Amino acid sequence: MADVVLVTGVSRYLGGQFARALTRDPSVGRVIGVDVIPPPHDIGRAEFVRADIRNPMIGKIIAQSDVDTVVHMNVIATPTHAGGRTSQKEINVIGTMQLLAACQKAHSIRRLVVKSSAAVYGSSPRDPALFTEDMGPKSLPRAGFGKDSVEVEGYVRGFSRRRPDVEISMLRLANIVGPGIRTSLTDYFTLPVIPVPFGYDARLQFVHEVDAVGSLLAATTGPSSGITNVAGDGVITLSQAAAVAGRPILPLPMPAAGVFGSIVKRSGVADFTSDQLQFLAFGRVLDTTRMREVLGFEPRFTTRSAFEDFAHGVGPAIPGGATLSSAVSGVAGSAATAIGHVWAAGRDD
Image 1 (cartoon, one colour):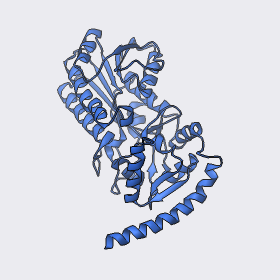
Image 2: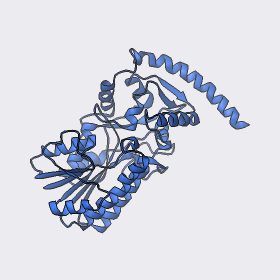
Image 3: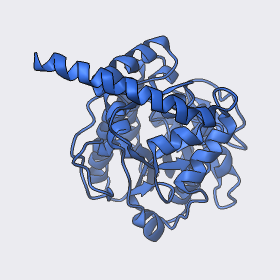
Image 4: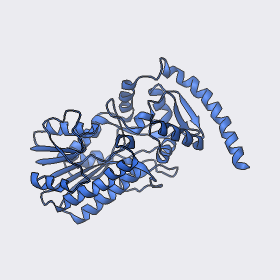
């Protein structure tokens, strides 16, 4: 049972939601939330301490408060929300190293819960139909959040070897969606027209923000589950998701999609990386047997209903956008085919 819980990243949306939910659990004695800036939202009865996990000061906070459970929520997915890619990597990687070093020295620590990501599996045409927790990526993430998550998990495994007495729960969450959270993927699905890799229709899987918080609560107060996939039931294809969001799609050859993504990224409208383009082409689906049988968690939302809840809050890009999507997609598909032929001819030269 968690008595004194330290939560990192409470000034971020999901961290604040989790801290507030945790304070409503009568089995938890005390909740301490840390971040570099005061939270702009309610965190319940959690005590806020202004601290940077990249600073060794975090060790003093853990020792002085006799913390027994650490929930690491401060692995940032979107660089624009962290002040740039350099800052994002420092927080994700250096911050995790410092936090784990502090936990290693603290004899009071009994459990570590880490919010990881299904991005560690990467995306490639050689992927299995379902990723189980014991599978590795067919194509390692090469940049950004996915690469950071792989490094974070490596440090956690190293910590587990050094402190075998500490229970580890590391949740690999599918892409989180909902009415309140903002990520690079939610930004993508709010574009007026959605560029998609031509010739692909990726299978996608989502977890609702409510279920993301719920799974982390289960990992904090319930049984230790080790590495666990977390996702809503079922899948939705990229074209189906675009239709639900009421967005016309613009099929583009992969090289053109990469150029378009770079332009959008530089404009600050949405964040695109090469790994994200791979994901949009090949998708990723998780096996969630362990989530139910070991973690003991049952999501409230399926993949489709989670995305529908997100899309309902966004609304169509333009009136009648859902109806217009089919017409625009047909025209865009024809144009993309022509572009693809030209591009292929250019390569033959």
